[in-house]
Length: 73
Image (cartoon, rainbow, N blue to C red):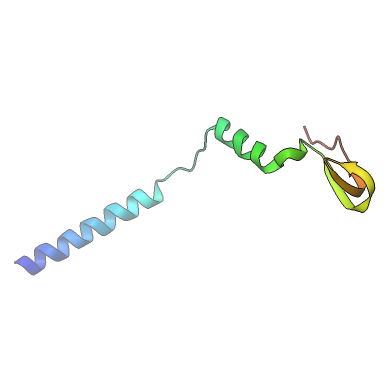
């Protein structure tokens, strides 16, 4: 009897875990996504790209080329 009860309990846990796992939503709030995007840009700002080694100043670094104003908005 105990063995059957353990098997039934295991199956119930397995099924409930499977249902919970398949019904999970990954909806991140827009404020959180905006914060993640702001952190990804770093201190260089929005849409600024610095390439190569040269004499152009790009936020304290000397680079060959600084490209600004590229946006898809």
